[in-house]
Image (cartoon, rainbow, N blue to C red; front, side, top):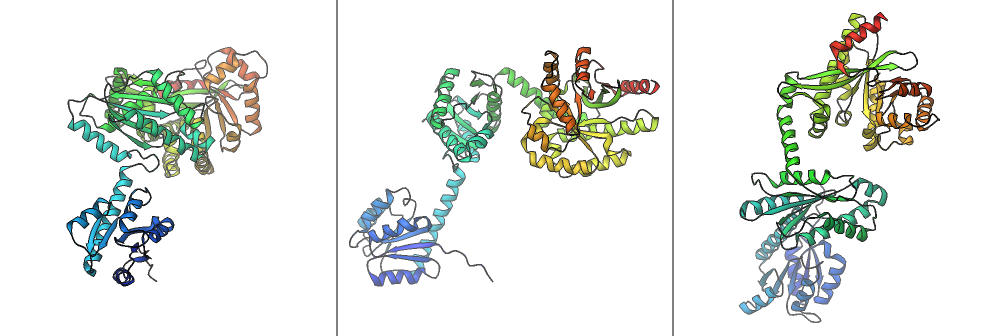
Length: 559
């Protein structure tokens, strides 16, 4: 059975019954027709059905309320003002047509009615209205009424291009932990906050600029330079205004500014720079505003240089894996190693992971690099097995991007089968922060891999928002305590502290515990006293190349 299409509604307002019936007969084959004998009846119908009415055919001369009065009422009401109205009249004088159009009519037709003319006029005007509404929806953000992302970028690029002599600033903002606003106060409160922020942006832009709501809590404004004086005090007052409007006392909003200079850049790229400036002051008490400066420009240029060569670096095997040993605290012998990555660039030399890993996580290249590391780790495990070295596992990092890849189990199984390595010898590390973002999905994906035989370690525990409930729900095998957590806790008096209770709790959950960043004999002894299972850190050895590590393995075998 064919699905019936919902007919558009047309309201016919005509006091003459014969004329009304004639219009209904012309229109009813295509549209659903509502009827009213005068303007007041038509208003009553509009009150109930205005959202579904596509067009009104309106007679001018009627009792109770004539057509001109009806036009005045509907054009002044924001709910009714967008409904197109075709005026029908016996008179075809220019004065009558001008009078109707000046009162807000969309078009004008005369009697007697010509069916084909009526149908074409009606269809054309309804199409124009729907097209205009669609453009409006694309042009404006539905929630805030500001320009949508696409339209803002289009307009801003056009303004900058057509006014080469005018200096402009691009201002944006970023709300710290906006997701928590929705979680704590609810979606409706979050939406009200965004609407208040939009009001502030309208005030900032005034007649000197345009502003848009890009997504979530991201807003942007292109304004003529020297329109505002940018200071922390200015933005502090704005933040206080938003807090008072929303009753969110702890709200922190950071602002970033890019002063338009290089006009070869797209406004989209300028926004990225302004946002970089805003995010550079996250967590800095009393700082609300940052200008994109030369230092940030140099950092951006450095990131671009790294991005340009990262594929070549991987192809040319400039990346190397390093291993840092882990020791059994009680038995004092080698128990495993963590696999780390180093980049030996032919011109730049050795690059710290802190330089390139965050960038690769941001641009997505981390997934390729991780797979390279996993493959190398499997090769090392196979080599150790062939040489009869101690049978110890290697721990490799799994990024957030990796864990969401539906093909991850296949990728890992293919690797271990190709090298003939048992899956339990390749420990997979996820940081504590990764678990807090999408715990349900993480739990599901980790569970699949554990069923295939892989063991999971939670890295950096104690460095972020550790949750005992989260720990209770996660399918993991090893808990790795963050080095700062270790350093702070072992520096305290020798009494049972939180570190002791965390280890006891982990043991009660059948988890092994690794203490990271052990640098002194005192720290090791303290970990031993509170039953920590394993430890790694500079006290034992720094990360080293596979060749150097093999010497450790040989020495361990001899011992």
